[in-house]
Length: 79
Image (cartoon, rainbow, N blue to C red; front, top):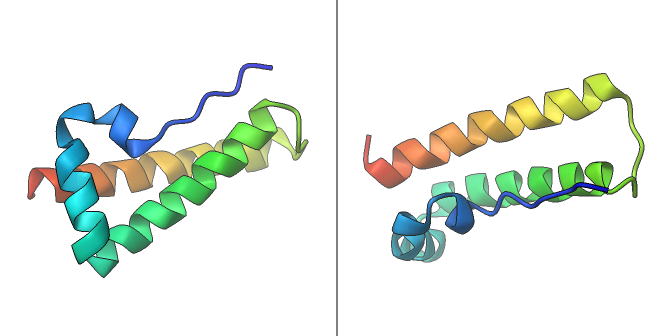
């Protein structure tokens, strides 16, 4: 068992206040963050052997999580 959550506020601690602000005030950001968190939770369950899908499926989830993290980071940076 080696699962680790990748919470956005932990990944980008210097943006913690902005994450909170955007979560409350920007429905687009909060929707992306919700999807990111759901993917992160699913990947965590897989890594903890709570769920056991194929490796290909797991890798596709990880790829989606990285793409969402990139989008969220761009929003946080204002780019």
